[in-house]
Amino acid sequence: MKYNKIDSSLFIKNRKNFIKKLEANSIAFFNSNDIYPISADSTLPFEQHRDIFYLSGIDQEESILVLFPDSKKNSFKEMLFIRETNDHITHWEGEKLTKEKAKDISGINNIYWTNEFKDILNQIIKQSENVYINTNEHYRQNVETQTREDRFIEELKKIGGINFKKSNPILQKQRSIKDEIEIRLIEHACNITRKGFERVLKFVKPGVWEYEIEAEFSHEFLKNRSKKFAYSPIIASGRNSNFLHYIDNNRQCLDGEIVLMDVAAEYANYSSDMTRTIPVNGKFSDRQKIIYNAVLNVKNEATSLLRPGVLWKDYHIEVGKIMTSELLRIKLLDKSDIQNQTKEKPAYKKYFSHGTSHHLGLDTHDYCDLDMPFEKNMVLTVEPGIYIKDEDFGIRLEDDVVINSSGEPTNLMKNIPIQIEEIEAIMNNG
Image (cartoon, rainbow, N blue to C red; front, top):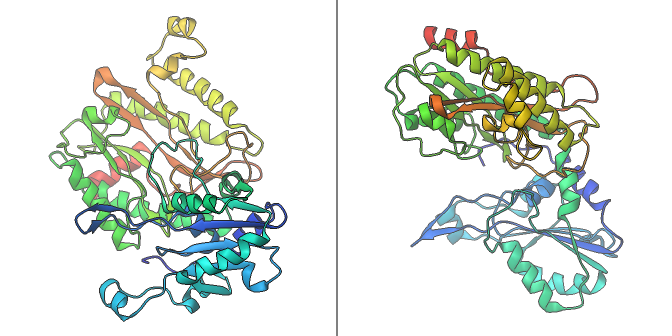
């Protein structure tokens, strides 16, 4: 892995907190992701399942974590199964985890080879009253594919007589509240993103292509131990800035336009998430400044609302009111728009169609329980935007913040330029 070793105390603590929520005499299983084929002998780069990583720190394929805290045998209470290597595998694929290395990363004492799993499974499954399986129940999950976890669950069901329960509801709540180590990892990803953005500010000028800007980010991210973008980068100039999920990045940036960049680095599987909008020629027009400052005002006010005890749905209602006020101020809306709006279709949605915030962590749209009030150490994005299709441009700004026990949240992107004057100064003096 490109990232530096993570303190194993994080994974030990995560397992302890998870185990506390299990019913008595229960087993929980967690599987690595598959390596997915493209065609012929080509595969996608391996991405570890975030739940097994969260509980063990193991970032290798064909790994299985088993938690059986009430087992009568100490060697079965916490078990990690990893792929046994040999000279042939090492020659073709490089070194794999040894048992000693896996123990050092995870803090788990009982490390086995995966070829020992079936025999141990047959022993422990008869001793348990409940089996916790790990299904994806994220509120945005909409991709249908059979995972390694799915196949494992199918095999368990063939055994019969098992009382199944779900790990995901526990993890939805637990993963949404970050450990201090996790916050530092997210902050590190944010700092790598800052370096990429500062590089791009000195690079952008009329005539560059969107993919060239993407390449500048990629160079800086890899240089700083980020293995990839945290998500597919959006580099959207001109009218493309109105397309929320534009990822073609294949247009030339022209004089007088803005370029909206929703792009960020990951670090150690933890995501950052940044959006900045800059002028291609290094100078915002008066009209662009009006819209930009309106978005910035909404972002700042929305950030101040992120405090413990606030409910998700109430937060978004309040942000809608703030956006409505700004749109009235800059005359994109008028009184008749407000009079004709409905609860289902508020007037501000004409210019601001997406949500303001989402949880952030091991996934860019991280696990969360939307009915759970905000708590200290939740990490959320704040990303309002105003999109004016008739004028062929949109502006979005986004930072990542940590909710504190009281007062203003901590902005992990406070060092990333966002003020108009700062952006123009760097672009024109870089």
